Length: 300
Image (cartoon, rainbow, N blue to C red):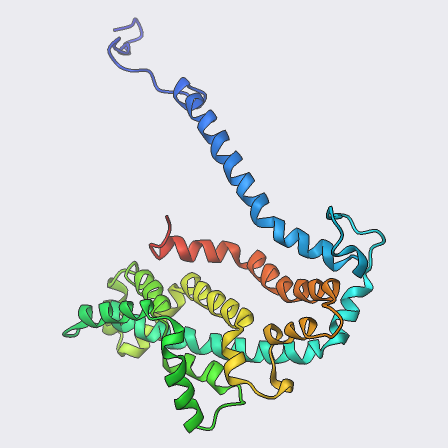
């Protein structure tokens, strides 16, 4: 004991580690290696995007020269205008946005309702049915392509947008249901009990309690489906007949059907315009996207 009455620390106690301790310094080389690997992977994944944008600004004669010329000279900014006038680009964009928005709204609604039933309602055989639903993820689209085409043909929907967005309102995606179910399970059930005491029905709990608390997961589902519809090629190829109803994915094929060779600079310019909205959308929603993935139990 010291003169002022305080007790001196014992010698056997370990000293508290400071932020710059030896243990922390040992992890720095490992962190540098991890960051170097991630940076190399980023460069590898960015390579096609950079090449596409570079080709979009080149004159046609520079697109196929060897060795490749990374920096176009001169820079042909008018390639973008020529690309959107080569095909009815804005009409295809309007068709794509229509299908993507309608399909996204439908899949968010249907998937969230089904996921709520699996996560918050107790009923006999629930887990078995959920396993069967997950098993449908292993069924590839070509297996169901012919039966679906026969159904839509009987409904006289071939040549319209309906086969591309109506099923999203009535047929929930197994992956989206799984993602939302995992998120719904993290919401305390005390909220449900409190809502029932206040007189809420089951649908009222879904609409007023679960949905407002699940916005990050719903945003992830919406982003996934919007990207799927925006990039979908096989679906529009099967169901759309009239060129006026084509989407952007189908419209890009017109550049390769030109007699005398493909205008690669115009094709890359149009592809850049198609990819740009998705990149911008992800840039502004990445925080919500990462939060929804992390809180749904899907992180690595």
